[in-house]
Image 1 (tube, rainbow, N blue to C red):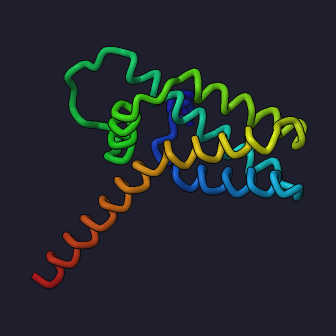
Image 2 (cartoon, helix red, strand yellow; image 1 turned 90 degrees about the vertical axis):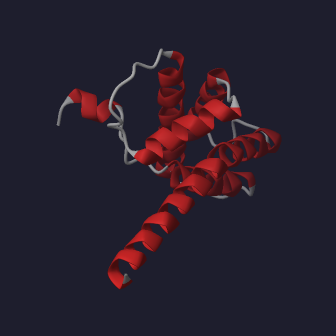
Length: 145
């Protein structure tokens, strides 16, 4: 595999990563043990969001639509939401802190991270659900029609 294909994985499912990370954060909040892999998914989600936000900063050249529809939709959602890249970096730092020491942040910080991850990825989930329903409907019409 080339380095370019490893830098940006278009098959990342930000909604699943957010769900797993939120679950891990709620387990930490209740005092349970959490696998570092679940928290690393949160870091992966933040990396994905940061890469999309950095792409938004660069001027867009007119070109063929080569990216996956889901990635384009995620980029548009982030652009519309006005999420600050520094906020994403802060959440990523907090998650890395939790990997090192699960008791490094207060329950209020954990709640803040959970809310941020869920509100950021909710529109992405809605777009992916609509895309799935559209594809399913098209298949049904083609097969039956």
